[in-house]
Length: 114
Image (cartoon, rainbow, N blue to C red):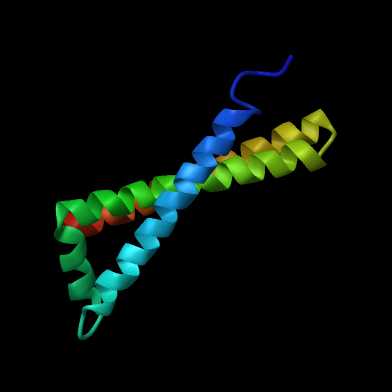
């Protein structure tokens, strides 16, 4: 029997929901930046100073990382048979994604505070 949450309907639903959020955010972001006359650091900082935009960007970062984790996890699960190599790749990818997420959120909130 496999561990709960590693396969089945739940990851499929989470990936579809995260894909929908990512798509909607990209459309919203594209529309928002198309309204600026010039898009420089001051505009970017001002746009992210709005709490709704800042929270949406943070959720976007989390959604992209979660979506990526589910996809990479499924590829590793399907195409890497040796368990030791699979565990190494899981650990490596989780470290990369976690590091990227922490870096992105740190940059986002540091930008917001500045």
